[in-house]
Length: 113
Length: 111
Image (cartoon, rainbow over all chains, first blue to last red; front, side):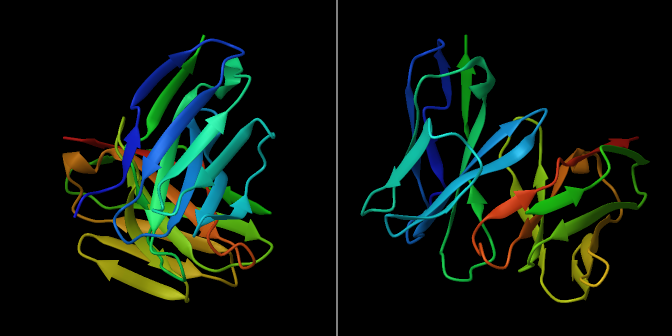
């Protein structure tokens, strides 16, 4: 069974640009969560989608948005990039419902110059 | 909201035992998770506790006391490959699928 895949793995952007990251969950998983990981803040929850609906949202500005498609694949978008957005962006999938385990993808390393 | 505390770093010798503590304050509680993350890799699931007590899984055990807002992860018979960051995460009651993570504990295993 294939794991969670994220593309691209590495990305370099400049301030003011926008970026779109993609996540393909494990087959059959309907829940996708996004996290930002930085050395200073650790893992911070961005948002979670289930069956194309955003169920939970973390404390991030409106520049961070996401969506989920009918095949459960998810994208997150960051507009007007800032230097502080440089981070590892992790996607995690689970069956949903009351499933306990989230499976993480390898992440996308975003560098903003 | 959630407030989760765990030590920043711990060092132990190969073959020894290390206990990583995690304390939390939450507005609701629906489970505590431990994840392992090697440098440059994604976190991997280690354990889940929702009721008080000890859950054992091979060399790793996790304990939970809900009344004290306290958990620990016990790593036995340490191996060099156990050098990693260990993340404690809490799931809130009214945000079932949102995990709040602690900053992580970096464990270094020395020969």
